[in-house]
Image (cartoon, rainbow, N blue to C red; front, side):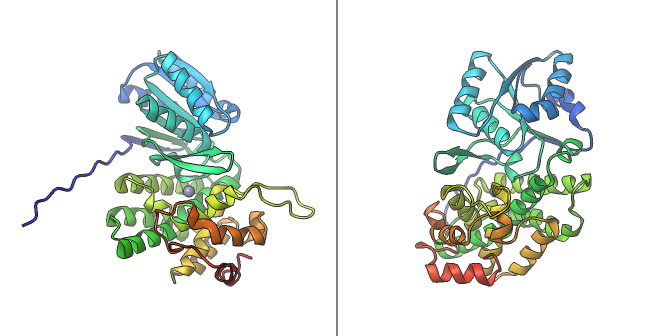
Length: 362
Ligand SMILES: [Zn+2]
C-alpha cells in the first residue's frame, strides 16, 4: 500500500463580526484577540473620516496605543512605507479600514511584518476583504500577491451601505464570477491533474449562488444588500483559505479583467463622463463569456448581473469593443501557468469576436 504523505495548512479568520453598527465592538474584538496594545490603523483620506477616526477614538479610550497611517494607491512603495512605519513603532496589530486597496496594502504589510491584521471594510467592492491574496498596481496593470488572511473581520453594514451603490454591484459581480473560476478549476483538474478541493469549490459556488438567487433584492439604499454582499465575499475568502490559493474565485474571467487593466484606461464614450471600470464589473462581464465557453448557463449570470445593476456589455462597462476583443485574445498571457478554458494559446481573433457578440457583450 502506498504511504500517506499528504499534508496541508489552512489559515482562517478567527472571528467575523458582520452587521448594523458593529464598529463600537472593535475594542472588545482587539481585547479578545489579545496580541498586544500597539495598534496601527491604515486608511485613506475618505475611509479615515468614514470609520478610521471613530475606531481610533474607541481604541484610544480602551487604552490602546494607536498610530495612524494614511495611504493612497495600492503600490509596492506604499506597502513599504507602511512596513517601515510598523517596524519603527513596534506595531503588534494592524487594522485596515477601507475598500479593496487599503485592505490590500494592510494585508501585504502585515504579512511582511508577520503581524496579524483586522479587516474593516468600508465598501464591498471586491472579495479581497476576506481573502489571503492582495493585488497591487504597477505601471502596466496589476499583480496578485500572496499575503495572509485577516485574523478578524469587522464589517459594519451601516457604513458599507453609505458607499456608492456601484461599488457594491461590482463586488457582487466579482463574487458571481466564482462560477466561471470553479469551472476553470475543474477543467484544470480533469485535464492537467491540478489539485482540486471539492469543499472549496462548493463554498465558492455557494457564495455566487447566494447573490444570483437574491439578485432581485440587491439594490441601492438597502442595508440588506450590503449584508448579502459581505456574506458572499467572506464565504469566497474562506473558500480561498480552504484551497490555499485563489482558484475558487479567480479563473479566466479574472485574467480577462487583469488584461483589460494591462491594456490601459477605458475609452471616453461620446458625450459621457469617463468612468473607470471597476475590477468586479470587468470580472462579471468576463464570467458571462467564460461560462458560455464552458457550455454553461451564461444567461443566468448575465440576468443576475442585470438585476443587480452591474454592467453586462462593453458600453455599460465603458470599454471599447476593440479592447474587449484584444483582452479576450490575450487574457491567457496574464497567468500562463494557470490552465483555464482559454487553453494554452488563448482565443483566435474570430473566436473572440464571435464570443463577445453571441453573449451580447459587444
Ligand atoms: Zn476579483
